[in-house]
Length: 145
Image (tube, rainbow, N blue to C red; front, side, top):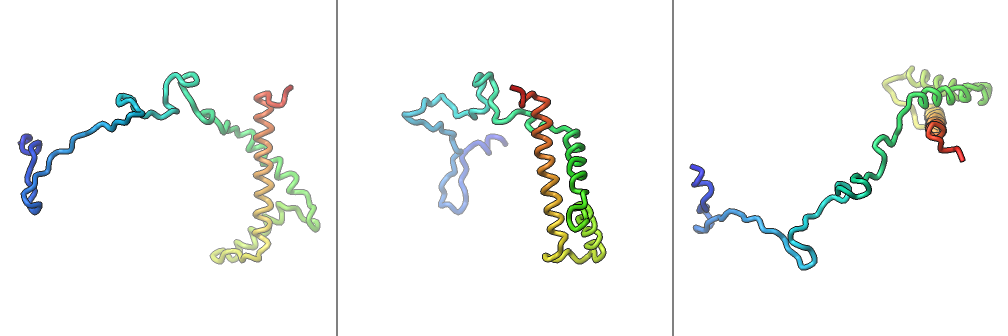
């Protein structure tokens, strides 16, 4: 049974030509030795201590202290009543309530909700980014001379 699959067979409809098995050929060039195989340069052993990576394994260095202090560090100044006697957080949370009052309908493009949403989150992300830089820079002695 196995011998019938290994032997060349005639395919009906091709005028009696036989289909021969495909033979693997090694590609050769005068510039490259035939025994050399292309390798991933990031996996070559012995290069830069045996391991080459573009980033450290733990490049994010996640720390929940940064998230906690960053959130508190943004909520405190955004809660100061500086916009017509109201705070940015208050205006943002108030606009959420206003938009939820007509829930299935999305907020209009002219709604103040979008301004408060973008401003509040932009401030939060900036505070978290600088918090990550400052906290990790201090713990890793980056700022010492």
